[in-house]
Length: 131
Image 1 (cartoon, helix red, strand yellow):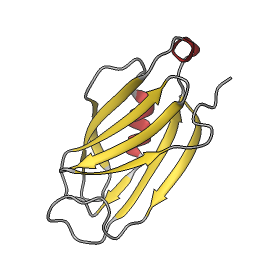
Image 2: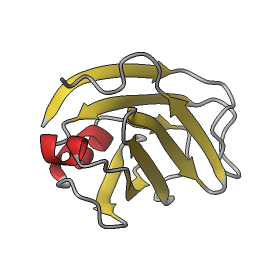
Image 3: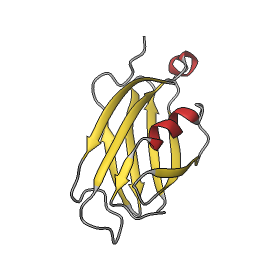
Image 4: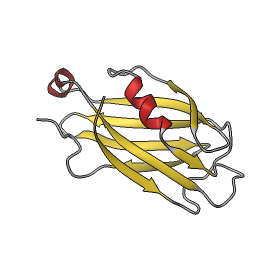
């Protein structure tokens, strides 16, 4: 379940590149603060959630799937990724998302990569909005 959301909209001309793509890109990547149960927060847990997906001709992620086990369910991550728009990246190109939770910090960063290039969004402020 998503508690709070920080929206990061990025309109770039040439930042996240996949080889042989047009120079103009329109990227909208939203970082969703996905709820972490109290037991994990208090249990000194740190983990990463990795997801792979393809990009359709409209720049929408499709065929989203977990790449590694992690302690949270898939639904909040799939819901978050499905809202993104990655126009200008090659259709059907494999892409990956890496969400990082660090004990004592909270959600630390989100990294989206495709074909050897990546964009990393590091969070600041209250990354762990839990008591």
